[in-house]
Length: 172
Image (tube, rainbow, N blue to C red; front, side, top):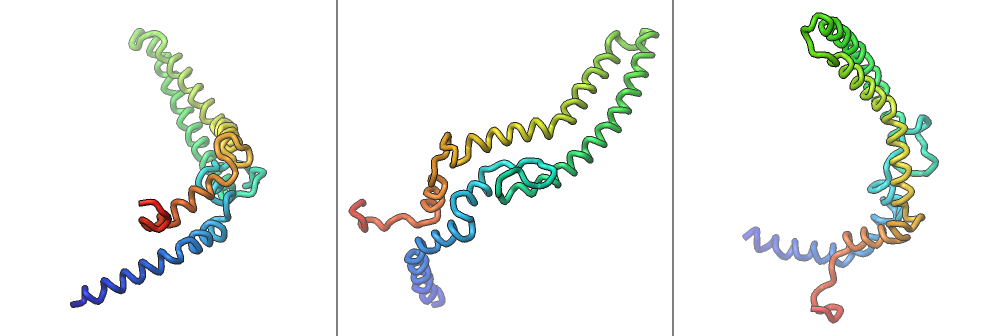
């Protein structure tokens, strides 16, 4: 008996949502998401790890800079401590190489790999910033290289707005 009452209520709610969907979609896109640049900032733009928290553009994701730099500094300090332990192990390996207990070149391989890893850890943020800046420049709607002006907003409005009813505009 309850389902007989619920079905018309659900159909009425669905009809109201369908009727007001274009206005709701416009409100969501323009007001809450900030239009084209807001959607781009939330979904596509990569944050830049800048010390002051801004990367030269107004974007909702640029505030990640201080957090990512703090995490990188902590990981870099930890890796430097572990690298000093690796150097101690490499020194022991070098000593054991002289007594023919370990094969030749083990210590040099450890030190070479450690220095390369340490170099990459220290260069992570500058490499990331360069790649993120390049990707942001290529994908920016204002550049017109990949995304054209209005393309993101059209896609978002197509996703949010309901499809037309069959037969309403001449299509089956």
